[in-house]
Image (cartoon, rainbow, N blue to C red; front, top):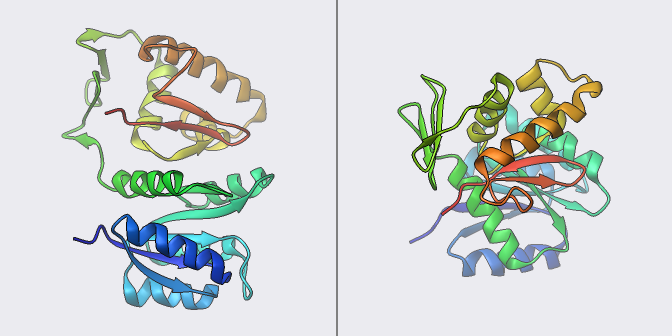
Length: 228
């Protein structure tokens, strides 16, 4: 049984072929487009569940394709980027990309990232309750427990945790966190994000020095992982 349809928007035949082999082997159906305009038409008419979108296309920038996709669809979008493009990655994430993957990448990483963004479309929150690997958050009452023990979180810690959980599996940039938790993009508060995240890790991670739930995306932001 197919796991879904993935649209590859990339003008390099070798990349298309490599991605096609990896994705078909993992159980996905594949559509390919060499230009942004064809890719946008495929989004409308072929209804893929996810898009792998290269930044450099012959007719338009990958970022512009992303913006136009977001005007018509909430399907999962993973940007294909190069090393050293941190600014571009941040710009894409803040304009609706679900994730990015840096070239060169392994088949294992690609499939894991794709599975994660598709899984995120099915919210882990049921009846206003999040429950994963011993961590339970009741959003109606703002109660947080870990392995049955109630945690005492400050207002900012709770807001930060809530924001991360509601975007589980997705990278949140530091600016997005500032906007959602503090209501500002003030760069002076960047250090506050780090401080509160460290406090939060002390309370919800088994080993705060090697966190598994809240992980850094260097130069980009943070990701909340669902644990098995």
